[in-house]
Every structure is written in C-alpha cells, then in structure tokens.
Length: 193
Image 1 (cartoon, one colour):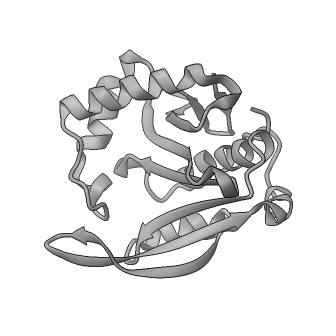
Image 2 (cartoon, one colour; image 1 turned 135 degrees about the horizontal axis):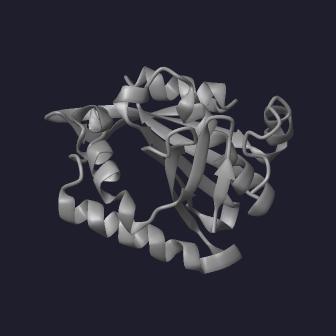
C-alpha cells in the first residue's frame, strides 16, 4: 500500500468512496483535451477504480500504480498519478498524471509526480522513467521539465486526435540523473514511501 504525504498533497490508493470525485475528474473535457481517447464513461471509470484497487495487492512485485491525488487540507480528491513498468528488460517505467482543471497552475502535478519518481528509482531500481505528451500540450511538457526530465524525441503522427493525426513527444529521466534531480526535493515532499 502506498500512502505518501507531500507539503500539500496525499498520494494514496483509490477506494470505492472515490468514485464521484474521480468521475468528475475523468468526465471533465479539459482532462482529455490532449488525449486520443475520449473521457471515461461511468462504467469505464468504475472498472479503472476496481483495477487500481486490485493492483495494490501485488506487494514489491507490483508493476503498476494508480494513485489518488488528494488535498491534505480538505481531503478532496483532485487528480491521479500513474506509474507503469513498460519493457521490464530495460527497467523502464512510464509516469503519468491528471489534475482537475480547477487546480491547474499551482504546481500540484509536479508535487504529485515527484514521489512516483522516487518510487520508481528507489524502490524498483528503474533505469529510466519516461512520459509522453501531445506535442501541443505545453503544460504537461513544463511538468516534465520541472521534474528534470529531458525531451528525447518527437514521434510523428502517433495518435489520432480531433479528426487527424498528431505528434507526441517523449521525455525521460535516467537513474544516473535521479540523484541530481532528487537533491532539490524538500523535506516531507514524498521521499519516504
């Protein structure tokens, strides 16, 4: 079970009581503005929460984390963060995040993602952590840069978006870069998992 506190957030496992708040996040059109997939419907949202809850039973062999992002002050669920082992041969993990649009522009995605980087590098000995974004999603790209991730490339026409093909960018952080990147983390911002 993961339960991490940062200065403003709690990252925790999802529970059944999260359905309505999570549904509000997933149903918001801005959440999926740069995604190829449409917003999750109620049934898919329910299935996502069920899968997230079953993932937590894997212990240290866990290969996927889907965590709720909750405001510490109010207990309100405002987002999600994910971490998934991709090709295990190279110890590569993919990180992702979504914060409800009402809370954009406050640095909460960066604050929520840092503990997942620590989880990948310090618990699972990741060699690299990657993130993908629509080429026009400047907000996600800024989050990646604030996490000390570097753009490695741009994939041409890899996702079908709004009736046409769109490019994606890939950013990555290597284990050799993690120590420098994590050195700037403040006390209590997710270093202990």
